[in-house]
Image (cartoon, rainbow, N blue to C red; front, side, top):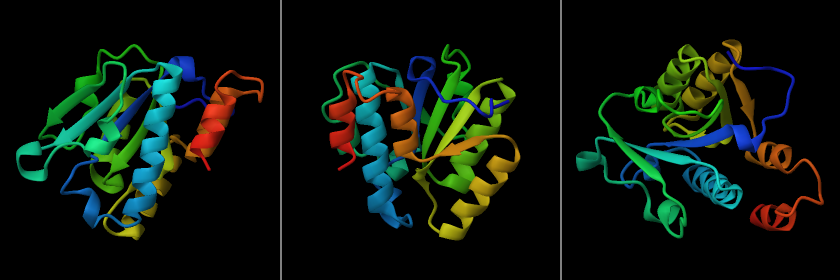
Length: 180
């Protein structure tokens, strides 16, 4: 169950990017904004040296993770192929206490993954401006349901500044520049 009322510490977190694939993203509502926000999250996790996992739903038919998301990654990044809508089963051994979830589609793969992660006892945060569905109403319904189940929902910018905690943090200027 998610802990409410506290800020999420980057040193306790991993990032999960769900199905940001070549043939899926172009049909999503707000695709450009979601891609930008997922890119910022992934780059920030690289700066903080935290684990990243990308999932791919049936890549033979839907393509692979967008190359621009994987470009320049200087640490090992896991890519998990799946046919199940939830990728949580592949994360059962993850040591991170908190999983930040982003990706597509909010009302299918993201939703099922988040619910399964909760059952695993993880703290889950959905980066609201880094998830999408083809229909914006479906995205909103998923976010509302997840909030109602105790999942934390935050903006990318809120998460990044929680992790920095102070403008004197060594990564402050780097992270702030990503947001411009």
